[in-house]
Image (cartoon, rainbow, N blue to C red; front, side):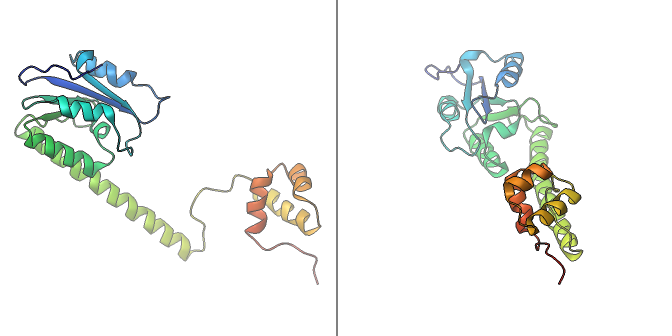
Length: 205
């Protein structure tokens, strides 16, 4: 992989690949970079989360790149922790005369090109930001509607309502969690949640 020791006078394509966990495979990204014609000696990699600040591979790549180079990635999200960081990095690289090219985004980008390619990148960034806003608004609306109708928003209960009601009846009769778990087939961890989320059943007065 890239070592960044020697660099000719610009005009190179330099690859970067990242996965967010050590158990994940870089193979797909590396294959795409190889098909794009980038030799292993000019490919830098990281196996760290995008939220991690310390990304040695990216830092070495940025130190290696020269004006006239283009950084090639599988998708743009490989180079940043979030959309804003991606845009900031692309802008900083542009000021250094370094382009960024993606291979597999829905709208492949090459900021080294003028005209439509640069406009495409700006549109992609705009759409991503808009989608994030719309998603947050839809979630907030769903919560508001559910709360207005006294409905729960979130994961559905993992066990049938009749079993949960039976568990509450058993508890009201004085059975232990272990006994209730055996009779209902509901794990103790779930029982604790169910039995404390609603009033206990008791004998009629």
